[in-house]
Image: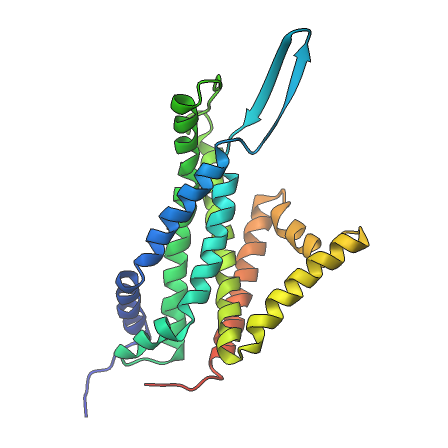
Length: 249
């Protein structure tokens, strides 16, 4: 009988370090998906034009909006992948339980969200460089981080929270699918059905209201509370559901 007592925090740390190495391929996929989003952003995310006689001026806006959206999708998919048996079985290389497994997964997803959020916002500079050097028909008016440092930092922080929120949602979805494969069909069908119903009704539906609740908040403090509380509830729900599965030690 061993007299060594291992704390939950120590187990979570060891599992997190292991997963950071074992799941390194998710960061390769992050690079790929962000580069793909940068490519889609090269035509601008919006704009307009004016004309007077023979003179016509077209204005295009370049931002990291596509990159941020793709990064949130990446976080959602990554969280689902982590809950699959292929990844979760590695937890039991260690002496562990569901609590340490879930907590180490959450820490990993948090760090992944930080990396994804920072790189997504920094991609704005990459887009501007590509447009400046390879699209000669554009006269680029650019702003730098030093012009609006606070806005840039808020953008990074907000993106990290959004990615983490989608990670939490993906983790709950992945846990539900592990409990019953029926959810793999039921959840996408419910989402697509909601979109179709909203479109046919011509009114602001549930999905649009939910998106507006999180993406149109003007108060930074309230936005932070919304995201953290929602992500926390999603993870708590996933943790509670995972306890229904067989515990291995």
